[in-house]
Image (cartoon, protein in one colour):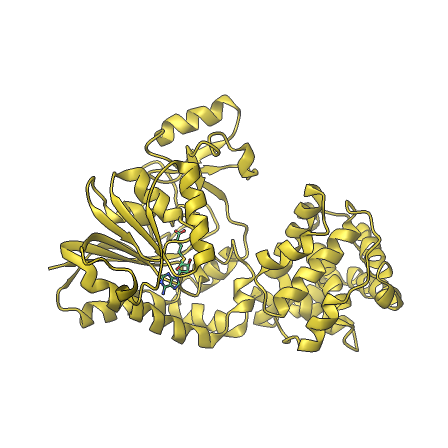
Length: 462
Ligand SMILES: C[S@@+](CC[C@H](N)C(=O)[O-])C[C@H]1O[C@@H](n2cnc3c(N)ncnc32)[C@H](O)[C@@H]1O
């Protein structure tokens, strides 16, 4: 985000006039997406912003279009802001600027991939502005700016992209951090974060093998491939309600990189296991699919803890869900040590930006230091709870070494009784299938290069 919104902008944003546009029109979708972009600029996470905005979009189709434009806008925000800056002399009101940003988002697609014809976008952006009483004065401006843009589209994009922030669509501090942390792969990583993640499923080992599930999909003509021990990637994403076996808990949605956690934890029947930062329970479910263990799912956020319950209900599996601070075991620990602890700690989420493209605009450089301290606090508190011979798996969905290898080294040095075991370390996100230089060990015949970014370190207690 190139400029930070003021409180005044946010307040104005909430006082928009009643909108009279057909809910299935592109104009309606542009207006709603612009509101969501405004909310993210004011500090809201995109899913929450969309929930608020979509209350007015009763149609599922309209909601889909709003979501699609808002997510694309997050991946193009700096480029769109740069174009706006170039083409508009005096900054327009924030809502008008955000409608323009959403329109640029659609107009900067290559023609082959464009969802709408350019002149439809211009026409509908003008209608969106005209439909708001307080902004209708700006419809001439919107029309002129977008037509001027189309006239010199490629040259304007090329010029804007000479600035790295507009080129990559991340804040400068983020670009610098990725460059510093991954000097060999930084461009590939930034690019991967601007692609749309695939829909990857985890097949519940209690119900089916990957091959059996692939056969079930083939029966209903759904194209998919194996991308890990329990992972299947659908060629074309679809709503979960339409995924065979989803309702019965045969499959769950989970990135292939995230599926490494439960496998690395190497759980066996009868073990006592702590999932220390558990919500929404993706990894909790996976652990329970692999062995009959006594599982405590700990989560500090009571509302999020409710989502663990929902997930386990669908899977028909059980854990003791506990609300508490992993960094303060006195609140919840009953004194019996754990054979395994999964510490999937809060982090920058820099490894999952392709699924959460708003994160880059919400985080600040200074957050990293605070997160590192919090991760250390949690790890230090959990280690004494591991049984002798037991293991702790440290996980982040981050690509910043400060939250990955640096933490693992700090932990090893600070705990004499910790033996570092084999683990993948840094899994880098890569968009291209089977891209060269992928860091992970793919099972023969499969390609799991197309996953989110994670860090894994495993420690055994002497
Ligand atoms: C990376 S997410 C966990 C994802 C989860 N393991 C999964 O696979 O679905 C981190 C979670 O830790 C929770 N959390 C943050 N600080 C915590 C703390 N001090 N104690 C326990 N949970 C915490 C957050 O609310 C968040 O739900």
